[in-house]
Length: 462
Image 1 (tube, helix red, strand yellow):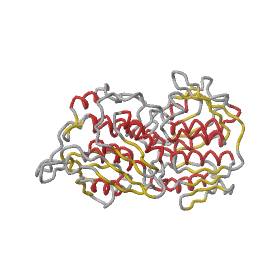
Image 2 (cartoon, one colour):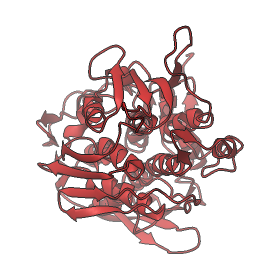
Image 3 (tube, one colour):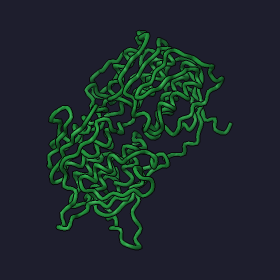
Image 4 (spheres, helix red, strand yellow):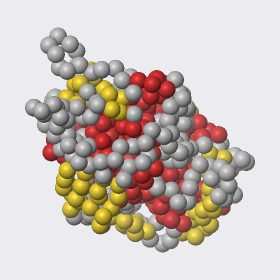
């Protein structure tokens, strides 16, 4: 992870967006990490990942090019340990150092890797950043334990680090993880659910996952199932709350190309919305209208905030964004299936003066930071008074005295930095603390801002 002790000053363009209006997006980290997990499992046998697969991954000829500059920190976190996953971890023998997998701040990688490691021979401790060691993981651990996994907490109960003794055997020499039935609340993070689903084809009895209550973030579960099926698994919904995965291993085939990230695209929708009629159009590539990414819904939301979207359906899967001038007087939206868009939309609404009420944002409390509290604090610096409640967030138009030259705190959250950067179009200038936090999901975000004509300057030493 790169040095992030940097403060950037972002200033508005003086003569409009750059003439070409082209933006390069990163690969979808959600898809990358699912593809990596599934492909690794397809090359696993008797608790070992094929060494040739690991070597191909390391030299850049595997399922994902490790040398690509379109990969984010979260994907790199998985790549880092998978490249050497064929090296036998120890069995906890006295005097032998336990292998450590450090995921950093990558939440998706933590959940997916935890599940994958339960099937990999040997003992390993999986850990992460200080914030990661505070983030809950007990729901996933309990579910894996119910399937036979040997997992212990190293420090705080319910949070990483975890000590995992993978490929645990019973007294008859059979793997303890046989599969079967698991019941989870549908309101938990979809990453827990996806982690369980992806390892299920490797379990002798498969998996029958019963979800109770409201099922949130279903698009991410559907994304997982789609990638599993593309790799040969037999998995799907049997009713609106039950997913069944048969014990049919994955095929050893290279998956299809990975889409660019629709969540990353949301910041350029925001740019178009705030630039308004001063901008003719902006073009994004590698985005599909029928994407399995739930955040494809961003174009429907921004349709109400003055942005029209055209899908060209060409070889580059180009999407063209244009200002429409049609902005609603008030926005109400349920973010249950797309919580990662909430920050972008909240900031955009305030900059446009559009009151809003968002529901389905309960998961924002347990992300990289408490995103609802962070939005409240940082938008107050700009003069906007947000209200938050149980699973909802709103702005009724209330204002407070803005700071003369606000410095936006990111709380080590990449989406805070990117959601607030386009505010320069409205405010003229905004300062972003800890600006390189964006590398978590969008390493070249600031480069793209500069390319479009924004002033982005390091003022850390001033």
